[in-house]
Length: 416
Image (cartoon, rainbow, N blue to C red):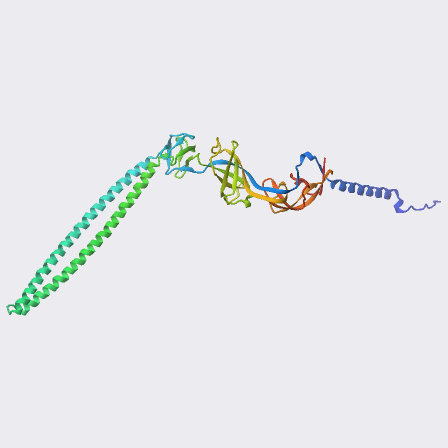
């Protein structure tokens, strides 16, 4: 017969032991993995930029790169549609205001010029004919007026004679009355003729103004045609250097198209591109030191672009004195805009990607340690290479100033 064996507890069964052991091992592995994932990353000390905070004066200046450009530039554009016939002057040559640099051609402009000249001649002839006609009409009316004046005087003389004869009894009353009526009629006729002469004179003035307006319109059209003809000989317009010609012989160009550029090379300014994060501190007339590679030149801000382009704000610098030898248009220069000096402030080299009056964090390195700990920092005023520390660092503290965005999830960084 079978003998019943005692049943082992479930936690002592082999399968249960294996399962428990696996779970424990998995927990250990996961814990180790998590611990490994949170381990502080390491970096070579030579691969990061470490700066030291200091207390004292900080010169506020903004550094920017740019080029020298002519202060006065004249873009020459086409006055009418045409074809480039000849490039008379090549870029780089010195030109005067009336120097012809391009010769254009457009046969239609010549035909239009002749047409407008004929139209003006016709308009002037019409003015002369209208003036002669108006003068003739006015003279006729004035002749009638003179005749009416003569008739009135004659009738008045007869009236006076009849009245004297009547007083002496040598004339009848009816003759006196007839002479008085005749005088009254002649006076009215003279008045009407006088008003007619005035009306003819006013009408003549209006007619002449109309014809003269047509003549002036024709003269204006002829002047435009003449200017278009003259624009076929493209002139520099100012004394200077012909910097570039944007067309070539045989090319068809439209009215308003850019043809060439002339500049005065002896009047140069510096155009710098200031980072947009520092542009808020810019004001006109700030002093600027410009390095032309051949020497330094002092100037002042005369323009600040109101818009941001390519991550920066363009500013123009006018120079107080002559530029060093070798300065020429398009020469690359470095500029330093001097904003002033702050005294007795904690400052450090400007950290990567930090703007003025913001908060952030830096990895602070303690002396004698091979680890850096993240510390919250409040920044104040900044220049191109220095930043004021309002809170978070003290004089003598060292911090990593290079880009640490790849370690944003860590509070500790090991240095090797």
